Length: 175
Image (cartoon, rainbow, N blue to C red; front, side):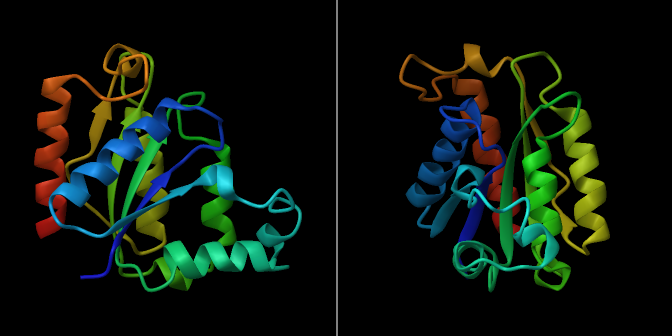
C-alpha cells in the first residue's frame, strides 16, 4: 500500500487542525501505516498568482510529486471557515491537475470550535471531490468544540474522540 497523505487544510499558523492532523499521523504510524502530512502552510507564496493558472512553480510541483502524485488515499482535516472549508483548500484543489485525483479515496474530518464540527464544509468538500472522481469514505467525522479536546500543548486528550478516530481510521484502511 502506498502511504496515506494527511492534508491539514488550512494555512493558519498554530492551528488546531494541525494538532488533529498530527494525531492522525501518529495513530497511523502506531498501526504500521506509512503516512505523510501536507500542511497547506507549505504552499509557495506565489501559489495564487502562478500555480492556480498553470504556471507551475518548482516548489508547487515538488508538493504534487511528494504528497499527491502516486498516492491513492488522502485524509482531509478541514477546519470550518464561514460555514464551509478554508478557501486555500479550494485553490489547492483547483491548482492540482484533476486527472491526478481521479479514482483515489478520501476520508474527511471536520474541525470547529463550535458545535457542528464543520458538517457543511465536509458536504461541500464531498461534492467537489466527487466531481474530481474521488471516492469519499462514508464515515465523515465532525470534531466539535475542538479547543476543549486538546491540552495546553495541543495534544488530543479526549478519550471518546480518540476512539471514534480509531474506528474511522480502521474503516478507511479497509475502504
